[in-house]
Length: 483
Image (cartoon, rainbow, N blue to C red; front, side, top):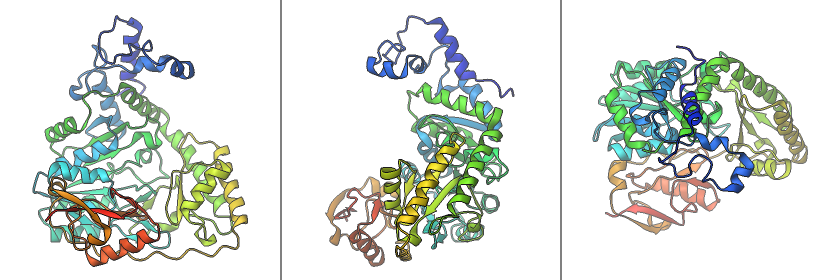
């Protein structure tokens, strides 16, 4: 196919050249109905792309024209049988994958570090989850990878498992052995789904981990907006149909996608694909080079560390995306949470996230050397300021996974109540609770709060640790299932 084409962009441009009397949704009628203060800042042209299904612009839910052609071009770039544009983010892609892999009552394997969208997919599908725990890298306090031998053991214990989801790369750039995992899954007739939200750029560089679809995954969902140039909330789902039911997948996407898709998002996917197809290797090489420059400088700072390829081969880590800068000042006694705040408040450097030990800075092709120098110069100054700090203590090992008494779907639709935290011990949880880091839920909806889990969370909340999932983030109260 001619990858220099931009079918959806061209279709909208052709429609706008006609400038018809417009009686469709949206109601702002190109730029005329947009707030003037907004227009004064950003101009008018962008609002002319906020259209709907016109004779030129195709229908996402029944694509036959410009959207269909744009998706075919993307499928060729990413080595898929078919690509689907997503306007509800990778969240809806993960939901659709889980719903496609397993029907209600069937078993599907989910990693404990999966994004909460996988839990949403379980609630929608009614599938019965079995969980697989990624390795934990204790030095860095990061969850590592999932090993093929762990997947093999899972299928021995659950031979009826219909599919497995893996997160690779993770937020921190950690990659599992997807090729080895795919071989195990396919040997057991199961579908391999990969949450590849952070990995679209890996298809365009020999210096990065290989793309998961190339390694044998059956479905992958990618957040094209995260590092490859489309607008926020725009993603793609790529599928190969050797094992995936095409009609079921398409039906599930209808269920989880908006019936009013945003054409700004769709156009941004078309244009990002064009950039990647025409000069992706050049763009991603720039990101890799900048990240290497940053890592070398950071690791020369006394007391500051930036994770690199030395992690490969440990904690189930098969490969590492080195455009992710995992930076630690733990040896200086500076928590990641505090480091993030100092970098922003005092040095005007805004990193992606922080945890107890680390901050994460993401380098993309759109960064410039001046960005890197500002970050590293700030870290050098921070290292001088905290040179006499006491190193942080190591975290405690996680408690055993609690027993499940109902599926997430049944838990979600069961009557629940809020109780004082002290009363939650021994109860079935109605919510997910994940200490962050490492971001691995200690309990999912439908699981019983064991003494070990309760005690770990109790100590964590008393220390003021950050928790994801519960309605009460301080965990003074907890949602439980009425029994």
